[in-house]
Image 1: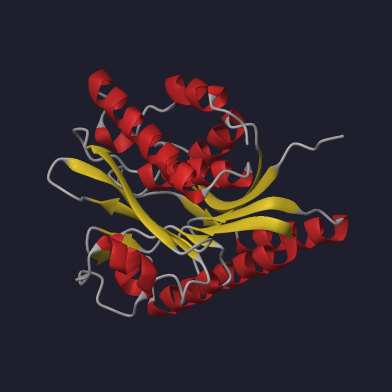
Image 2: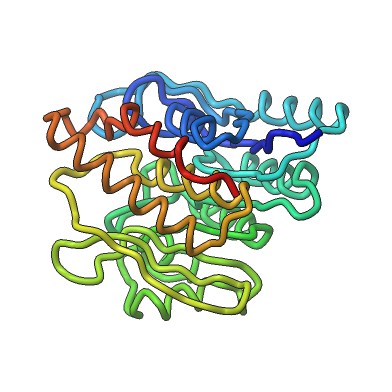
Length: 279
């Protein structure tokens, strides 16, 4: 009997503001994929505009969950990692990739380090280095332009190559696929460039930029891509699906007039993911 595919999702839970596990789990469910959370931290809200945040780091819980699941003999069609708060958590994430991913499964690492030419305040040099090591274990990485610079050992604000050159530079000699997010190929458009290690192809997908600047869109993008790849779809298909969904959600949110800091109002549009063909 066919088993519903499942993804182990290592990510924080921000209790207000649409991002992290609050976005990832419903997206995976809508795509017919079981999302199994491995929380890395619990925050009262995301850190983009809500003042001082109450937070609890969950490294011990993460390690305990990993050890329990290994004792149970669980395996997963996908392992997805997002926000990690420390080098220890990055090391645990690598262990999760190496021990929980079933043969033929996909490991997607979203190297959450910074945005807009700046590292996040919580990112230390040690964490950046550990994130780079985690990326070595990934099948697919999804950095933005700032994170791409850091992974290449450059200052966060310095990215000179065009996107299609960058994705090849980030591919570790073609050993992993790369999706570079936040790419603006021309004024008024935004999307992603990609390198597919299967065949060594590159491409770019973009749509019209919606008004506003919403936190959590990277998590939304990565969740759709993880669901698509776990279902067996090609990288190019997954990128196009993710770009389209994020764009539609952003436009819908702008029409609603939702405050930017609350993230994109994706909930009414989940049915579109459910209706898309399953691999």
